Amino acid sequence: MSMVSSKDFANWLKLQFDQLESGVSLTREDINQLTGRQGFSLVFINDIHYELMQHGIAFVTDTYRQHFYMVKVQDNPWRDELENAGHQQTFSNIISINMSR
Image (cartoon, rainbow, N blue to C red; front, side, top):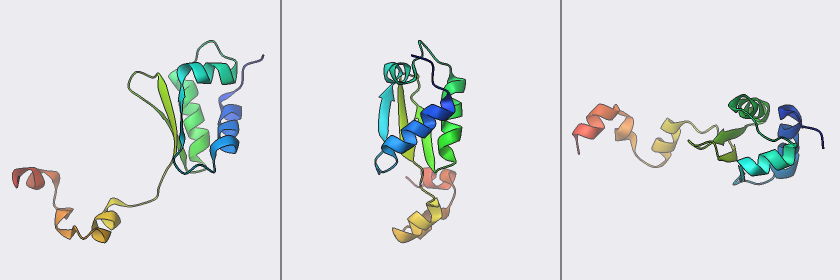
């Protein structure tokens, strides 16, 4: 089995899982198996993320770089969310919010 490039893997992920609203998770072993690699670097993950972000999908990892997550990115500004939830007073900065507790 030949090794798959980050671009090809990103395209495969998009084709397989683009319809899922909740996204998917993969382990390091999953990626090695699916791409035919024995190992990979953070640059490989960054390249996958770059390719997917062009379609509004993020590919991120946990702190230990053992689990990876493909999730759709929402263009949902935080101010709009707070206004919709009726929290207009929380537009102050974080220091004043913490001091009021």
